Image (cartoon, rainbow, N blue to C red; front, side, top):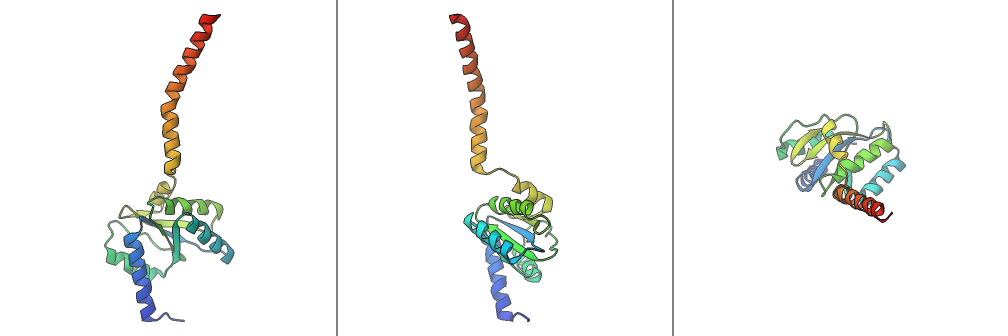
Length: 163
């Protein structure tokens, strides 16, 4: 059943708003996902502050073209899903985790990061960046390591002098 022109305009405006306001956007192919899997993906994404919508490829291309985003627009193969959020890394990271869980049912096609189009491999690389909390932990551990080594060396010296 064809979609009315008014409804297409509404979807187009929604896509433009998503692209303009989101910290990053990830385009996914969700071929083969069951209804239960789709519902589970939506719920988990929403709990992490990430949104997921399905859009027609032609309307998505039109919205992207009108936004004049630099770079090469990714090729949209299969069913197209648009995952977006205020955070610049969370959408890609969350989709990547589902890509590993739901083998061959969901895959990253590309995206928009820092106002530029990114291809599949670039978005996958972005998705693998650890969370800010993990990076803070790694940084503290890196700073603490030499201090801890120094304290242990002093402790061994002290043990040697007392015996």
